[in-house]
Length: 284
Image (cartoon, rainbow, N blue to C red; front, side, top):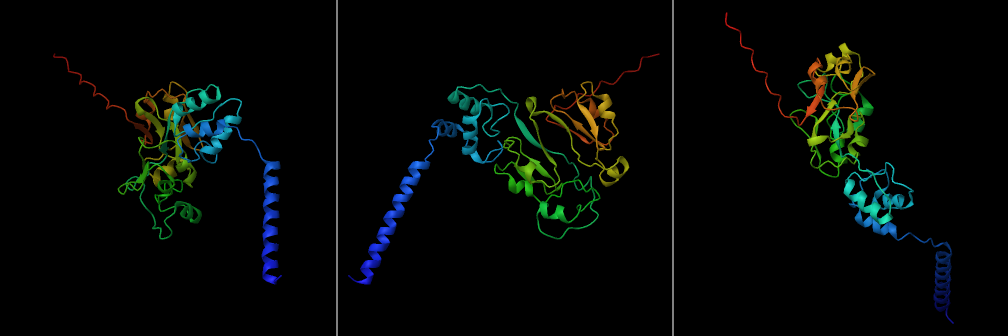
């Protein structure tokens, strides 16, 4: 018998032995998977965006099947409709959650926040933020290099060339939170979409004291507290020299907007206010 034949027979034997070992190992360590995982995964939107807090829709389906109750588990892309389908498959109940949308906590456009220097480096907010405070005197403001736009898988973000700030398309936004994670300045927040998409929030993240913040940006929050005093629902707090509006408490009365001295509070999708009729002077 030639050496070649012996080598071929030996290799074939090793291959068969290895196959047998793998076969028996697979049998011994095989884990039965709950068939409901596949059923739940089928009703999920297959966005795999990670907005639910799990690694993809498969991971979320596994978590739903294992959970005793859904609690605050939610699919931001599919919303209440998808969660109700998953609950029906698993024989569980789910509480409806208010839809959310991403908002930008910065209104420091080119007009409101003049540049003090020029950045000439990699077009990445993460890199720029690690190097210095930014091109303006506000080290808390948007860098405008588009990391949020790149991170958004739903085409719901773009950088406005005129203002230099990101713009959120609320019709496309699914509140996955990718922009929240991508922004090194923590300028994005997921807030309740609100009735008729109406929202009131503070468009500023500057924690400097009033005079310093106002000098850097004309529409910066100066932490004066007038909005908090005016709010009849105790929805506004002042912390680190900046106001914050709790969207769980806010009733969209917009009294805070009227008293803000710098215009740092944004109101979206409200109808224009009716002009008060002029008071006619009484004739003598």
